[in-house]
Length: 242
Image (cartoon, rainbow, N blue to C red; front, side, top):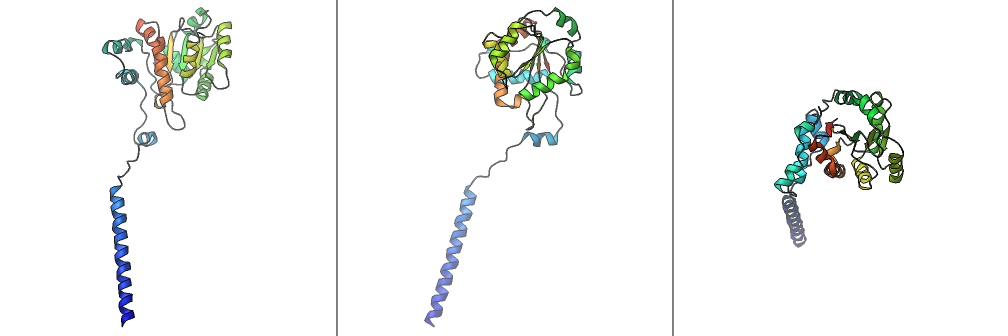
């Protein structure tokens, strides 16, 4: 009889130990807060079709960026007037057809432009590859106009400065970071500038737009602040969202 009671004791102890372990695991799992799954851009786009960018989107972006950093008077000076905006792309245009619509007198502007170190039209993209795509797709629009690549990939800034000094360039297509650097080094001037086109609606492989990439968004806003907003307020530069 004694050996049997020992077995029963051991079995009871094992059972109680297992119960304690289960309750401890349960308490641990209850204590851990559930992580919320971050919404991806792809999730949002799968539920609704992408909406084309409108001037209000750019106004909102600038306001949100400067709101906490600037006074009320400074904020007013950084506001883009409605009159400076060109018709936005409604997602039905090719790049050439959009440029033809917003700039019907391009041939005349191109012929009259003779100033070095400055461009008539500036196109801002999120990447070097996207710049190359747009340069190819604007062939039907540019005519005899000279187009220059203004991005950092495989091109040194010194080479770009020399190109701007030597010849007359009509269109600059680049990333905000490199365009900003060219302006800072006095390699590029805004004196002849008439049009600024933001490649607003295009999305990369991760479905991000120009303004969805933090670094590109920051550089784009800084570029606008470097003198473009002032020129827009004076009425000499127009802004388009493609």
